[in-house]
Length: 58
Length: 399
Image (cartoon, rainbow over all chains, first blue to last red; front, side, top):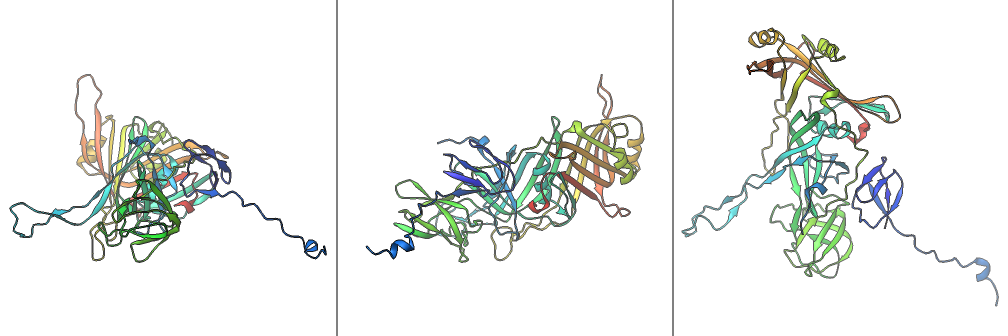
């Protein structure tokens, strides 16, 4: 799981290490801490149908 | 399963409104703590035809109090001072912020202490007393705190089944059992299968018993346990505590002289022991609307200083017998703040002190010491009893 340090200071998390302000860290430790925000994996973006394809006459 | 106390944490954050809990974000390494909730329950002594003392307990005035002990580094000490005295306007920059503290209404804090899997959150916290002493060189601070309430564990009021987005907490402990929770808290709901399901709160409802969250799937009967999940602690670069060896204590006829004397080792007084206790004598009585302290308000403030110094002449004996005004200034210098040349520092000025005891016991083979207790008094000339200034790396907005 990825977590972002959303505080303005570098923070040391036991079993994770130093996480600089704004840095995203990947760890198996479940971080429950207001200074960190879980970074959800980006959903796969569905390719948009091109306008020209829609208008294409088969 | 067993849990090691060393893995626990103290987390703190000032509240915007005294008694309205916030999720604490500043983590401080503890030396020890002994905060407890006193239910003050008493046996129900109504005559019910029993030949036994009682068949139940009835609620009494609840209190939440105890000690937090930390080593005083510049940043964490600021929070304990802020829950003891009133902070003035901070100044400075990241290479050194200066925070003045004077006698006044302190900030109210939410604090959290981990007990194994759960955290005990106390809200509406203020310091009733703050003791500063040096233990084996290190400045150790004991904050005797009181709180307006707590949340730690509860029970389900209604059964849960399948996908749910809210739950109600039992009112067995309090009529408003969700007091002390804040949006973003993680509650663990114990299901009937014995497994805990985590719910991150999106609402703490005004009905006092409901909390809302994104959908979770859990089947739980009435009475199942619910607890506040302990946070994962995170620490800023933890500074060294202040040390007695980096502390200069000046004594003089007035505060200006004492502060000047504290400016150099040559003019400072070598104290073999130096400790002081600031007291707020908080009003913590319950009132209508709350089984807990209704509010925590400072009453008469006072302070006491204890010292141990080499006996050099009769001056302190005269000062004690004749109740002569003295002033004491303590300046502790800490680590250099990264990015500049400023050091963390703590300056405490007692503008007027008088000796209440001054003992000079004799022991064979030993130099004579003055073992002293001073009462800190209000100085009408300076308009202060005490002034505190703290220089550290923490911006004023954090307090």
